[in-house]
Amino acid sequence: MPLSEEEQRILRQIEEQLQADPSFALKVNTRSHQGVSRRRLVWSILALIASLAVAIAALQISAWLSFLAFVAMVVSGVVLERELTARGRDQLSRIPDELRRRAGRSTDSH
Image 1 (tube, rainbow, N blue to C red):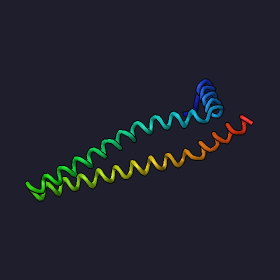
Image 2 (image 1 turned 45 degrees about the vertical axis):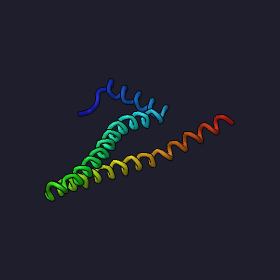
Image 3 (image 1 turned 135 degrees about the horizontal axis):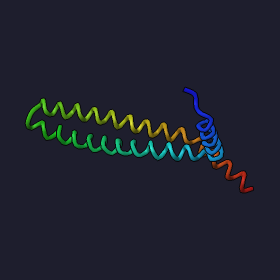
């Protein structure tokens, strides 16, 4: 379904604003991504610690219960690793933008 003229005009305005301020898109993307990622990161760390404690305590009760806690520990470790990898990749992708921004500031100040 094609956009109406009004919708196209609004879209052009948004594009112009984004081109005028490229850091705006980065700020919006960073805020939304970090909130979810930080929450998952904290929960996976807590789950990893809790499942480790349960696995150790469950050794006295049942080998099967300890095994299930170990599986939970592995799953939370995988989630933690994926979150850390995604955060690292996100940080690495921002390096060129940050360098461009810094280079722009240094040339403007001279």
